[in-house]
Length: 202
Image (cartoon, rainbow, N blue to C red; front, side, top):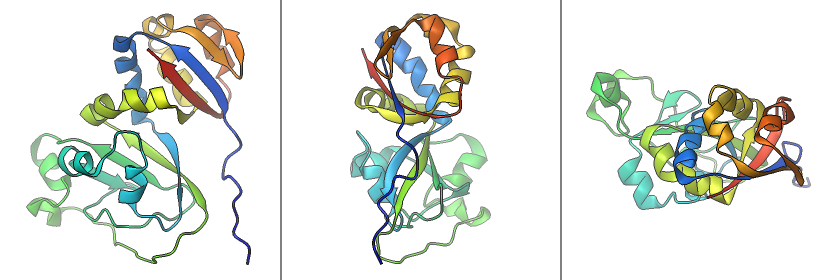
């Protein structure tokens, strides 16, 4: 049987813009809604994360304290990706009892629902993994991800910017699919449900 190398999603339009560093630090909070990262079915969560800009093994082990995979808190980073749209959410330390329960490898972890780990050892079809970044993880790693270029949903970005007109006004040198547009026109241009590759310069 031939391997299916077709992309799970149509090619996203390229959105480029320039903004001050303090604006970029505000923009990274949109990553709570998630961005897409291409991996293969059967690849481990750890391997997937190591493919992200700035996500070294040391950073993952020391700074990321809570990991959710498809809504379940996870301890084993060797769990394999599967399904049509797997979702990984990453957070630094969370406060209170809930934080202690959800923290990876926590003694309180017996109080929470835990995902069964599956191992196949084989690489399968291409997947677009949704990755969500929260609190200091977004602040630490979001700027470099945006500068390298990431794929996000246009509606997530337009909804986010519609509530932050000051942030939108700080953007300059905006191009969408090679066409220069103004901050005022940006929201209308990305109001349809599609994918964007966004790349930010500071």
